[in-house]
Length: 302
Image (cartoon, rainbow, N blue to C red):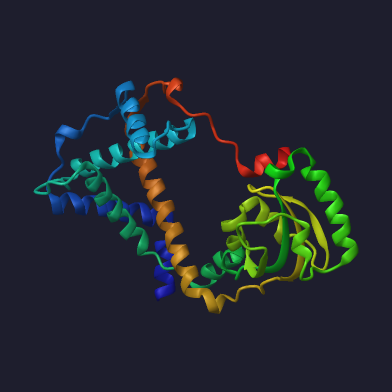
């Protein structure tokens, strides 16, 4: 019986009817709609855009990029759409809270409706299989690295790295005096059973990604980081076994609910936005910061 109910609930038509019932119920609970918010035009004018940019600058002490401004505009439009719908449903009655809280109030209502869905075990297993990598324990690696400081070595840094690498490869695994071949490093030179995340926190994501793919039992390099140049010896690489559904079922269910909630809220917001004419003025490009170059792009250019 419960499986039949679950399958019935996942039908789009049933979800639409339930959403309609939710809105109707809110009208009944909070009173008739507020006719003063029936205007279906949302205008994001130049003053509003400049205000959003100023607020960003005040918070982050720098201008936003165009991508960040687009995010601010979408967040404002979302808030305005939900705010108007919330007021139209009477959710502001006897509740002196900000427009943001009112928009959240409506979003919470839709989230609760999405939460009512319960997947059967087959659907949950399919979700797990599609996202299995997210539930695996992280791979681990043990390595030693020698650091070469480009500030002290200048233009000879890479040629020094090639020469030292040849010596290290001839000598084999690192010994007690191996680190003397390089320069002093402020952080650790030895990592034991470290995850990619732990390595990236010290040496950057680009360095960590490269090191995780290196073959054990030999010296590699040069490997670049934000600090300079490194020569790396991998002692051991441990690949995590696949995750078992039974061990992570509770996490999978939470993630499935989160995805359903996000999808439901997105579809609900888009259905509300379709009722409005949304007009956005031109963004003043002179107030924007150039898009930053990612670490991966920089590594690729080298």
